[in-house]
Structures are given as structure tokens and as C-alpha cells.
Image 1 (cartoon, rainbow, N blue to C red):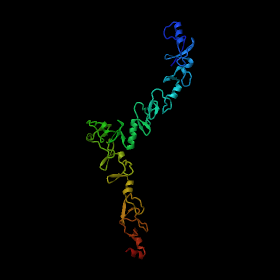
Image 2: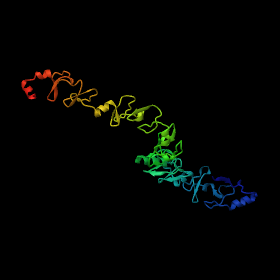
Image 3: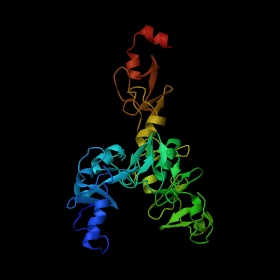
Image 4: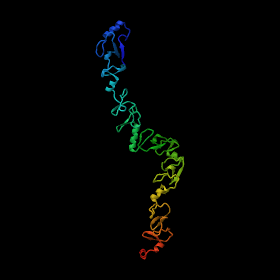
Length: 335
């Protein structure tokens, strides 16, 4: 800020009136090099004296509002012109950057405006990674890189997990960040979680806690025993539709469990007559499978059983009463 002083009232050091007038008579304006009148007001800016009319912006030649100016390379500018000529604009908000300037990504930024493209945390003091033209904090960059490679991000060190991961409280971690709650041994990916604590496999096995055959995690509530394994209720599901059985009947085949619908669709017999999966008892006759209700005489529709006498005609069952009514030529052909 520059102070506007009167030649008559400004006092630098104790002097007589005549000495003040003598000094002012020898003073010159820094801008125009002209002298000052005996009662003329002058501007003192850091020891430099100016006529009031000479103390103006070097760009717009207007007086400085409230005496505030910016000096650059020996020239003084008002705030507006200094910003226009020399102050950088923020790449985020578009305002002039006064004070600390962050230069990054071929642009200038206010420290608070230079943030991570994904999580919006400020990057001025933490560093960043350039990713596809965006500034990302290191954790966000690691997550994007891991996602592209199908990897997990450790929730403790925020680095990509290159090898096997450990799931603790539903989050992935590097196993070496943890030790067994019981023996203190550094854990591996096969560690077990129990009541909010982690144990190595040997220590956990000594506790006799059943392990789910699907998620390989301890079962602390209701246990389902099936297929020679133990399961969480919600993890014992149909191998086809993946819906939990929740106590309903399941059907086993080659070490897998199926609900009734999908077991019949995949492995059940199809009725020769109605072409539907046979969900109940099966009648096997004439090298074919039939629903009990569909196995009938193809002529009179009388229901047949395996104990009923019938004959095959045109690959279909015919009861004996209907066969007797056949023309003699058909009977001969049959024989």
C-alpha cells in the first residue's frame, strides 16, 4: 500500500520548518523527474516520491484504488491489470490464482481446486498419478489399475494385491498384514475369521469349528450337512439356479445338489406321450418312458399298467381288447 502524504505534514525525522522546505525543494518525482511545489501533495511509496497524478497504473494509467498496487519488473500495476497480465487462471474454477500456484497437467490451479478426478481429495500436498488425461490420487489409480486386471486392492496399504488375497470382514487384504490371534504366526490366504478375529488354519482346526463347503469360512450359526460337507444355510444352493434350498428337498448327482425342477430338466425321464419331464413314478415299456397317467391304450385310451396285457402296434401300446378288433390282415402282419 502507498501512503498519500502532504509536504507540509510529513515528517521523517525531527527538522526545523526551514529544513523541511529545503529538502522538499530538492525532491523529484520518481516518474516524471519533476519537482514539487511547496504545498503540493506527494505520494511516498517505500521511499519513492510521486506527484499524485504520476502515481498511476503502468497499464491503464488510473490511480490505484486505496493505494494498493502490484509491482513487477520495476513497474506498478493495479490489481485488475496485474491479474490480466501476469496472474495465471485456475484450470478448475477459472479464477485468477493469487499466492500459491499448483502447476500440473499443463495447467495452473488453486491448491484447493487441484483434486482427484474420482474421490475429489486435494492433491496439492499428496502427489498424484496421471491416468488417461486425469489426475488421480494414488489409491484411486491403484483401484482402477486393479479393476482392469481383475485384481483386488488391499484395504490396509491401498496397493494392488498381486498374489493371493485374504478376506477379513468382507474386505480384501494382503495376508501378511495380519498375525494369528492365537499363535502370532504371520497369516496366509487360508486364514480363518472367527468372531471378528483371524486364526491360522491349524489353530482354527483345533477349535472344531465347521467350515462352509462353499465360502470356506467358519459356520457359527445353523449348519447344513449334505454331500459329505457342511454349509451355511444361504450357501447350500442348487447347482443350476443357485437358489438356496432353505430346508426344501434337494436331489444329488455326481457330487452336486439340484432343486427338483432343475434335476428333472437335466436328468429326469421325458414322457413319450406328453413330452414332459416325469416328476413322479415312471412306467418303462416298449423301450420308452411314460407318465403313469399317460401310459394308456393308443386306441381306446384305457389306462394300462405293467400288469395289464397289451401289445405293441406302430410303436405304441394297444390293449388286448382293441387288438382283437383289428382286421385280420393287420393281425397277420403283426404276427
